[in-house]
Length: 412
Image (spheres, rainbow, N blue to C red):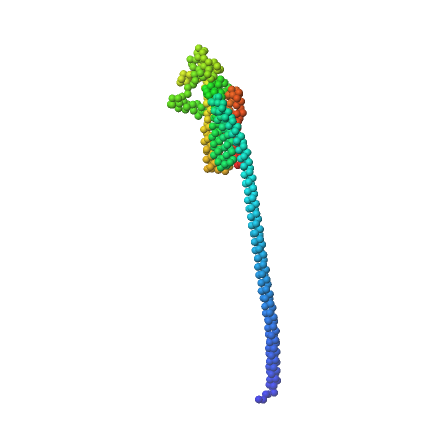
């Protein structure tokens, strides 16, 4: 094939261009291959580094896990140790508290035993002294009407002391023993009143009325009360009239309209002709329009009516305490068993009203005894009744107020 001369340069240029392209392609493939080899080496190094890092990370994770386990075990051991210490401290505290309670119980028992022994010693002493006095009265019973009442009052100290001692020994029985003591204290108040009347009248109540009649000018008027002595006297008269056994007024203690002269005193009587026994104290009571004639025809002077009213009222004031005190004592016992007050003088509990009723009764009984003492203190001066009076009032009445004071202190 013949190539023209004009196309030869173009052909040569084409061949040179193809050779240059081929050379360039070969050089590029060689560079790419070398770059691939270099990149594969780098990738291998990176993979090796990654493997090394992963192995190190795995090692670190194992170390962290090991450390965590060690720390957890250490914490568990510490918690167990702290729990053991806490349990030991609690056991020690409980043991110490138990020992302290035991020691306190022993000390309380010793103190209680000492108090019981001390109280028992005085109880025995009181019983011996009271027994001696009672035996002396029994051996020398010269005036039974007076000595029986003295013996009834003397029984108060052994009963009080035995009840108090038993209250220390049997604490749960203290409320019931208090009821027994309060029963006898009410009886003792009236016995003391009866003792004073017996000393003055030697068993004759009308002699005491006559004695008060002689001092009618110094007697204060009896308290006015619709349920007082006159009311109860009317009830008594009505009852005794039905039974046919009404007490008659002794003729020697009143004046008759037919007789202007009467002798006041035991065993003293004066007739119209002047005969009779004038051993007592004579007192002339003239006919007085203010007096009264009873259904037996006897003249009763105003002074005698006043004296009898005063004596009746004093006895009634003492008797109401005798009747009311056992009721309030039983009410107080039942109320304490059923209701516990939240505070001192709680108006929602019956204890407050029982306490008020008891103190009102004590006030009237105290008033009756004081009034009778002031009316007869000159006639009783020979037996010095003032210390006896204070003793009875202190034991019977002050004990109630001391109880209220102690109850207030314990509540506050």
